Image (cartoon, rainbow, N blue to C red; front, side, top):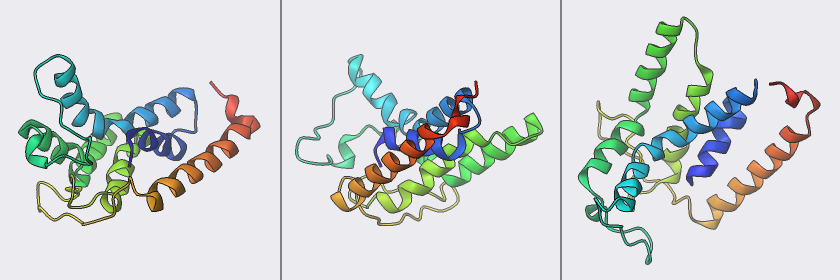
Length: 165
């Protein structure tokens, strides 16, 4: 799924308590991609890495630097997410539900990533199993995603109680 949709799904699912809750959940929904591919794009902009060629679709994974693969495994593992979520719950003595947007990101990526480009390592580091899903860029995934987000946000923004700080 595209990074903005991840943020929007995370925010609408886990960030409806307040504005700050919304934005925290939005960022947590973006975080797995920001902390893997965002690092790559920052390195490209700073001249430390070559830009992968996406002009003919996904580039070969071998053209993506190894550190991105390592970061991707870490940020797209539901096991890692659960450990962090439970650790923060233990430290705060309450769950930080906005963080669950990270877990939602991982779960949504499982069926919307194929073996063609970065399948989701949901059980890493315990198992290397990955599901061969459908590419999120196909109209069968992309259009329903945008329609559902549009409908949910139209409803959300129309709610009178939404004005809480």
